[in-house]
Length: 340
Image (cartoon, rainbow, N blue to C red; front, top):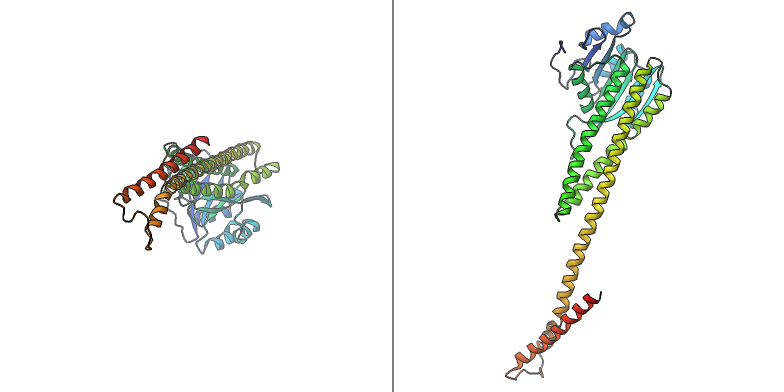
């Protein structure tokens, strides 16, 4: 891209993080808030191919006021920002596509598993995205736009975002598979230390991701039954394809959860078997030590009449009796074990 300026996760005084204009040149043009206002005020005079993408930081105090004064977004978008529900949903309001989707944070890891919400308002001329914390898919989309990705319409931008979201999920699933493979190798090698707890934490992360992201394909499929009038057939087909790819990733995530569950059950079975063997050995040792404990307890009583107390070979006689009973107890244990 020819026109670039340093971008970070902050925002200007309007709360705008970045703004791109598409359709005027072969690449997207970066605008500031004043240029955006001028474009929005005269957007009907621009070419059919032109549209803008505005990305906002909702943690900035001026964002919602700027959107209300200049962006002319649907009232449903403002309602979605304040209704407190972060469940995924996509709806049409006055030919405006209003969406609430969930995405992983920019610094997401399988250990933290932090997820946040992205709000979207999409029309033929204006795409508005807003978030409170940096998100990975949005950052990937910005990088693609800066690299000169061919995006011909606002719907194509939405499709690109869904593809980026799917790619992020694919990477998460791949990282999770690597961890599961490592746990499986350790299981086969007999190294069970903390494997079950690690797998449990990983499974909880995947369940949380799937619970938050699973409604998105269904919401998009419902939208595709009655798409907006400004969305052409090409965009509808690409959106359907992106939705199907997203569904495949979610299915892979579900299969991985089932695999983790089976590994947890196998680890639990091996741990139970190991504990049973330890308990069996402890029981055998207790049985073998029973004769000597009983005889030692009887002979150790501080009372008169203890047999063999004065006999010169009393110790060896008692040792022989203990040995005999121990051998008998050992034979009984071995016989029972072979019989079983």
